[in-house]
Length: 447
Image (tube, rainbow, N blue to C red):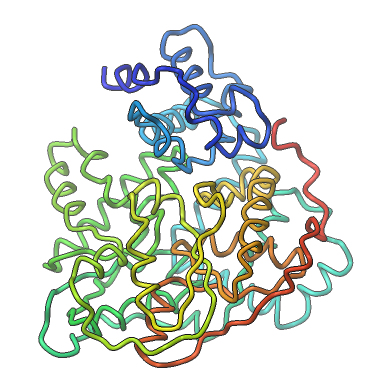
């Protein structure tokens, strides 16, 4: 069996241990990659059962893939944890509260239309002063930790964000160098519409005719990473069909987690006689926006200076999943006046990890606090990150410290340089590195 071969690739060397965020947090073998692989082996061989304790060790894994970068044996941990999480969802009975919360998350986050409705309520919640009142009175502490986390992650949005729609076509500036399609995303489309706008403008400025197929749904990344494999594949089929109707040279994605998943469609459908070739053809065209722009060749659009200190955060599924590290830095460092720094110990996850910060809030905060402290050591005026979840999570933890640090996607910084407009930059109060003002959720991440 292919699964057995993948499990046996692990030689138990331990090189993964210092790179695993949960092992770094707790120092427990079963919360390390090799420990989890031992559990997978025990399940496969029938020596252990899928008990709540065993399932919890898989739930606590961020799926950040840092272990894959560190592994000298090339263990495909991403495939192993993905398949194992599907087994957890199919065989492990969760509590009624867990089922309700998870059902709510996956009924909302992969559906942009529903997210817009929720966004309207969130906007009213903030604008009417109700949010201030709820937070001021401490009513949030009466909610479960997962709901506290969801409320705290609420992004700042405006009415214009909720009604904004992407154009179906943006012509190339000058002679066309390529014809590309853009994946609009779900959370990115609704809560970070400026990233998509910037992506379209930059691609057009660099000589690309840009198409945005109508009717796009979710790519399935969040579902697959949480073990909801059948739901994820259903979303994937829908997205493939949409892009099959729009012939393009490349399919551009600007969200790290989604990009890693899109490039894996060929493997996911490899045994499906109807979809295998279609999925392979789709994945072969997928390019991360940084990857594509650097490969496109010398820049066509002029870069105007931006005098600022930017710290670039490596999103895990970009750095570890897609092995894309140099390209975002190349684009940022090509902007005159921009000083680009790296996050110390940048290989470590920020704690967002898709839906991890919703399902494992205390662990996510523990991991995230290390990231925030590392970011602040670089004394940035702006944080650049290529994944919406990372941006939301890091910003929340910064605000809990009383630190206001603007954040932007690298393509937004590049867009500002091309258009010659300013960025919302400003040095935060780096002296405040105390623990978060709000108390952590009462539930134990290791319970």
